[in-house]
Length: 404
Image (cartoon, rainbow, N blue to C red; front, top):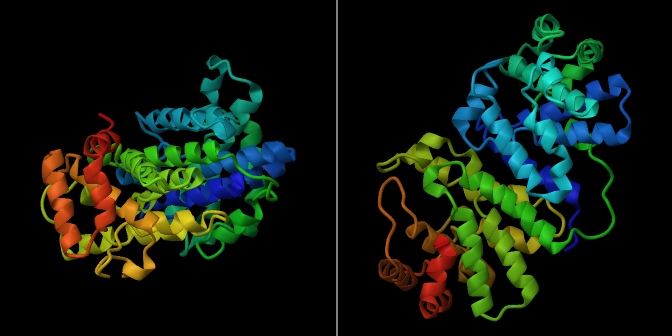
């Protein structure tokens, strides 16, 4: 599969920023600032890349919009390390990113606490660098697009007061030097930050990302999405397992089975932008809440369409709420525009959701799920051949969808 690892990581990191809902650039701003301060320190290119990608992924342990709001509005609080520990676990699960795990684990550790942590000096330095610029972004949050150049000296003064306690003296000095330039701050503004982050990206690496690595990275992001709510735990992973099972039952080529599994894992990454309170609402949704929900598959499309080599996977994942009769969303595609693979993902999404407990109903039995899916076939919402495959392998599909 011709996919550049770092481009894929960067693109999927866009979905982490969706957790901010109204503030979608936190990870990029932290990454840009980490690299800028690292340059001021004189770090070499490998260290700068670690600072940049560590900044980009530092909040990989955050799926909840509630936690994100606290992270970008408060300087420090008890319990802040929970998302750091989760981030470390996630990164350790994916070999090509495991070297960033320690930085993420300690990106809220105060400098004066590192003496008792027994960490390599490089790890302590980069973790504290990410912590410093992460807190700078929290202090600057309300000023973006408004009065940032008027407020930046107050922010610099606040960082200076935490020298030797929260932040390493050398890092504070480097930050104060780098941030004395207006350009440091202007690169962070909403109309510039995307270009600022892309300018820091390393050159594409030749060759292909192994299919197994691509699936593992997709699973990492599926776990992030599924952690957003206890009611969606295992949903993406279950859809992926089920999509692979149905693809194998349809005797599709092995590479197609792999790609369908990836599409299943990534189909709901756009849901990170949906506030927790909407996903967990026990009653019916208002028109405004439904409008928010209907954005998520388009956000999936926007994210995945930027990945070279993901052209097929993008459609299969993002069209999971499209229907054969054209009444789905967000593109209102019809029968002639939906591939068999896209129809598989759409059916798997329905099957797994019905097999899972939700705030407004209990998990449904195999028989009830099959009846509901057949009724959707009759009105042109699901593909009859795909539902027929599920019926012929119903026990296997149930196990794949639920992990039972």
